[in-house]
Length: 440
Image (cartoon, rainbow, N blue to C red; front, side):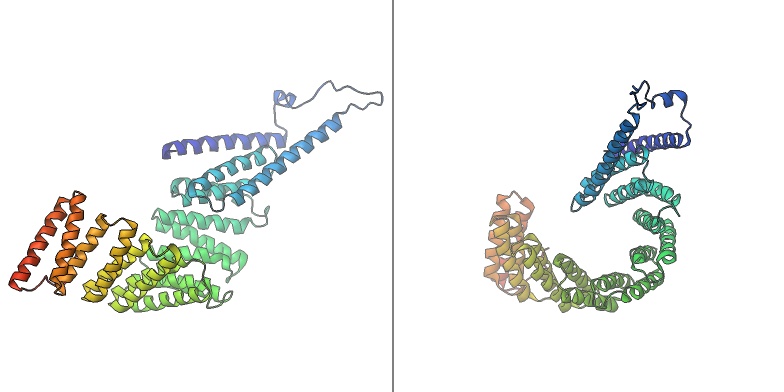
C-alpha cells in the first residue's frame, strides 16, 4: 500500500469513526428521529391469556447474544496480542489494523469504553513506528493521545498510559529528526511519570533514554550525560550494579563518550558493560559480538591496535559458536583482522588469517570463486613483501586463472602485471613492493 493510499484509508477510517461516535451519542441521549426509533422497535407481539407477550424473554435473549458477541470480540483482541509476538513488522501492522477495527465495533456497537480505542490506536501507532511509517504513526498516536486525555479520572491508569503515548510520539519525532518537538513530548512524559509514579520509578527509564538520544543528536553532550546519570540513579535503586539494565546504560554512556572523542572512557564503559553481560550469561551472544565490534572501533580510534585485534578475535569466536565455523560472518571478521594486521606490518599473522580465509571461502563459495581469487591476490602480495617470490607467482597465477574464468579482464590484466613484476624482481633481485601495497 502506497503512502497516498494509506493516507486515504486513514481519512476514510477517521470519517467513519466520527459518524459512529455521532450515532452513539444520539442513542445515548435519545435524539434519534422517529424513523430511526421505528427501525429499532418491535410491534404486534402476541399476548397470551395471562397478558404475557414474550417480549421480555426475547429482549433478554438478544442481550445475551450481544454480550456473547462482545466477549468473543474482546477475547479475539487478546488472542491477537499473543499472536503478534515474533511476527514481522508488516505482519504486526496488519494484525494491529484488524484489532483497531474490532475495537471500533466494541465501542460504537457494544458501547464499551473509549479506552479500547486508545489502546488500539496506540498499538497501531507503535506498529507504524516500527515499520518506519512515521507520518501514520504520528497520526494514530496523536488520536490516541486526544482520546485518552478525555478519560482522565474515568480510567485508573489513563495518566500513565498518557505518558506512554507521549513517549512513543517522542520517538516518532526523534526518528524524523524533529528534535525540539521530540524533546518537548518526552519531557512532558517524564514529568507525568514522576507525578504519578514518583521520582525513582523504572517506568521513566525508556523515556529518559530517548531524552538522552535527543540531546546526543543535538550535540548537547553535557545534558545527554546528565540524563544518563539520572538513569543510573533510578536503576541503581532497583537493580544490582552487575545487572543487564545497568550494562545497557553503560553502552549508551560509552556512545556519548565516543562522540566526545573521549575514547579512553568510552572503552572503559564498553568493557564494563561486556563483562557484566558475560558474567550474567546474557542470552543474546550476537549482541555481545556487536558490542565487541564497537569496542574494536573505539580501540582503533585510540590507537590500541593489539586491543582492537583481540576484540575482533572475540567477535570471531562468538560468531563461530553462534553461526558455525564456516559462516560468512566468520569470514568477514577474519578478513577485517587480516587487514588490520597488514596495515601494521604484522605480515606473518596476517598471512595465517588469510590462508584460513582461503580455505573457508573455497568451502563456502567454491574453489574457483571470485572471493577466493581476491584472497589469493592478497596472499601473493604478502609473499612478495616477505621475499617469497616463487610462492607469490603461484598465487598470482592461480588468481589470474579464476579471474579469466569469471570474465574479469581488469583483474586478469593486474595479475599479469604482478607476474611480470615478480619475474623482474627475481632477475634483478630488486626490492619488493612498498609496505602496505595490498588489496582489500
